[in-house]
Length: 193
Image 1: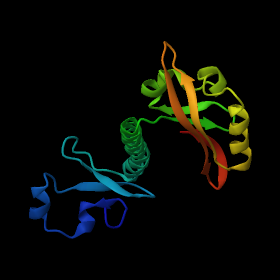
Image 2: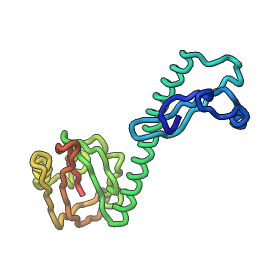
Image 3: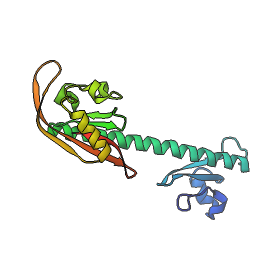
Image 4: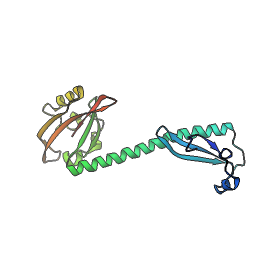
């Protein structure tokens, strides 16, 4: 089932019944959990409990179930990968004394990492808001025009030695970088570092 990426019944395998019984059953079907990225596992079903043989409708239902389960499993694996990457990015940015704000084409913040330590702004409070609404100190003095230029032209902009007042007191001097990010060959947003 794994090698051929298809549903396989035990009777197709050509293994002596004594060896099949070591697996707990002599009449079973293996169905791969697979997607375009590869095989993630196998679902093995047998008739041991019910004693009812598996018919063509059962095999079709099992294949359908495995296709759906593969999609769910891949999504979970992707979400875990994304969460691990976000955590790693956060650790790296924190250790560098930096923060990152991602902005989509409509000017809304889609991601924020390290903003609490550096700017006194909780990342979760920034998501879905515009930069001027969420972080007015960062969006002053022509910086929104700079952001618009990055989104339209796809060229990075830098402003060094920017003094920002943190909410609740204190100030910090930053070097702001507006960098475009692309997906599918087109500019889909900007990153403020």
